[in-house]
Image (cartoon, rainbow, N blue to C red; front, side):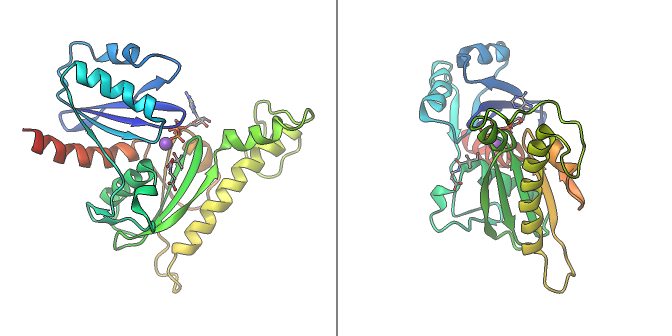
Length: 247
Ligand SMILES: Nc1ncnc2c1ncn2[C@@H]1O[C@H](COP(=O)(O)OP(=O)(O)OP(=O)(O)O)[C@@H](O)[C@H]1O
Ligand SMILES: CC(C)(CO)[C@@H](O)C(=O)NCCC(=O)O
Ligand SMILES: [K+]
C-alpha cells in the first residue's frame, strides 16, 4: 500500500510495509511524477491512498500513473465525521484534507483535548476537544513565507543563518527569523490557552508536524509531541478501510 500527501510545495510518498509507515520519499513538483514513481519499480502496489491540497494537475499526474499500472486509487476528502472525529467547519468540504487527516491522526494518538500544528508552507493550528470535536483552527503564513514577505519588499532586509537561538534579535536577520518563530509560537500558545479547561485541571496536548516542526518545538515552553508522520497516521486509517473494501 502506498500513501501520498500532495501539499502545496511538495508531495510526500510513504509506503506501508508490514503495517508500518516507511520513511517518506519527496516529490519536488518540478520533476515529472514518473521520476519519483521509478523508485517503486518492482514493488507490487495494489492501492494508493491519496490526499491532495495541491492543484488538480498535480493530483492528475498520480492518477494517470496509477491508471496505467492498474492500481486502485482512493482519494480522501474531508468529511463531516470519521474515526471518532467531528469536523467543526460550517462546510466540512472546505477544511483542507491535510488538516482533516491531522485531526484523525491526532485522535489515534490521544483522547485528550489537543492542539495540532502543521508547520509547512502555511502553518495550520487546529483544536480538538476530548470528545473528538474539532473546534476550528487558524491558517498562518509559514516561517519561510513570513520572512519572504519582509525581504521581498525591502532591500534593507536580509536573512542569513540564524545566530541567536531565542529571545530578541540583535541583528536584522535574527530579528526577522526570531520574529517569525515568535509569531507562530504566540499563535500556538494562544490556542493552548483556549483549549485549557477553566479550572486548569487539564492543559491539553500539543502535537507538532511539518517541515518546520523542529524549529518551532524549541520555542515552546510546554511539552511537545513531535509526530512527523501525523498526516500519514490519519491517511493509514483510511487506507486500512480501503484495503478491506478492495479485497
Ligand atoms: N528539504 C526541504 N524541502 C523543503 N522544505 C523544507 C525542507 N526541509 C525543511 N523544510 C521546511 O519545511 C517547510 C515545508 O514544510 P512541509 O514539507 O511540511 O510543507 P508542505 O507539506 O509542502 O506544505 P503545504 O502542505 O502547505 O504545501 C518549508 O517552509 C521549509 O522551511
Ligand atoms: C491551509 C492549507 C494550504 C495547508 O496546507 C490547506 O489545508 C488548504 O488548502 N486548506 C483549505 C482551506 C481551509 O482549510 O480552510
Ligand atoms: K502539509
